[in-house]
Image 1 (cartoon, rainbow, N blue to C red):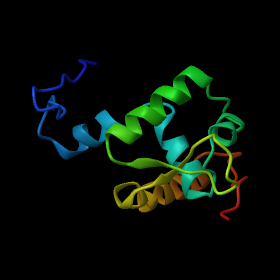
Image 2: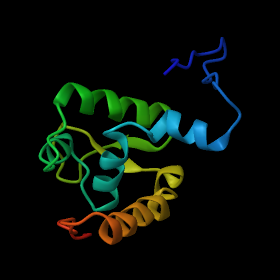
Image 3: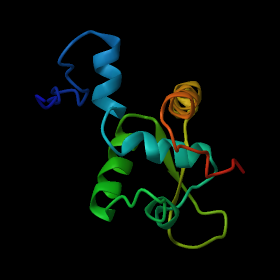
Image 4: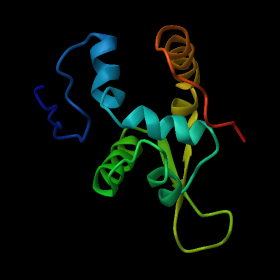
Length: 122
């Protein structure tokens, strides 16, 4: 896949005006939607994301969190417990991915034998 470049104004240069291609450029890799899924389910801390059963490597997790922030899908916030480690939350743009994640869950449950919902929303 050809990498997107950044313009002088700092905006992403798109490889195509197709909305599906643009969406995939942001969330279409192996790990990104799993981070979004975890945020939708109430997780908010790096250690919680890295503890997910899929086993995302920490270097990839750091990269995906940065990409999601740059895309305006998540934002870094102070941790609710007052610790110095940041937490993450979805922005409005990120919360709008809920129907997409729900549709993928429904499709997986209907068509992929052995799948199940392991996490419950908080």
